[in-house]
Image (cartoon, rainbow, N blue to C red; front, side, top):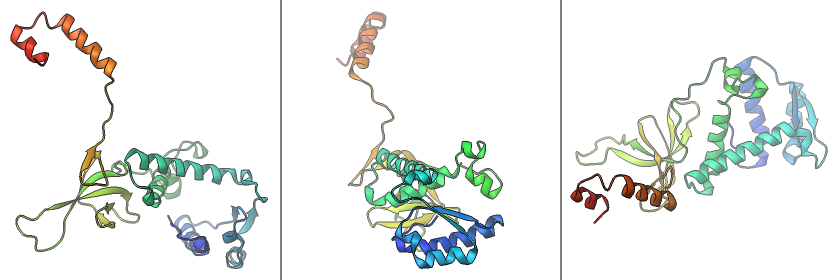
Length: 240
């Protein structure tokens, strides 16, 4: 996947995707549909399409519904990325990493458009392996590979899981203290714990017990169990 820093990089991204796609599946890109953004109307972009014989389809101005499949997929990606970030309190400045991971997941999920197959399966020809996936934004412990460690030095470092490193059998990890990305395969995960983006780490509570529920359980205990237990045990259980 190509993450563009600015729209003027769309031309280079098209060239790279075209070469990769044609080399992977042995087919030519025949039609390209897009809106009328400036990056798609540039002379260089149009020249690449003309040279490769790619037929252009442009939507009418202010009519995104003419390219509805792409627009709906964009919404799905953004909503998925936002949900992953909010669930683990990942700061908004890392939205690009969340989008990257959301697309990675969507390409490995079945869809009706492909008769319940995954895009990955149709592209590569085999089912994807998902055993390596972890909760986005969870706390991880990465093995320190610095040479000549002393006997009492730490052997691991706390990092944040940001997904899979593309083109590598390794994980993409963030050191929030140094704002640095690491790539490693020697990692232990705590998927129920999130980085607090402060001085300590916070465990994610899967559920909370409501007050009314606690009161009902206490009443049931007093009515059904307290009279059966010995006096000392009842006193201990009631917190006296």
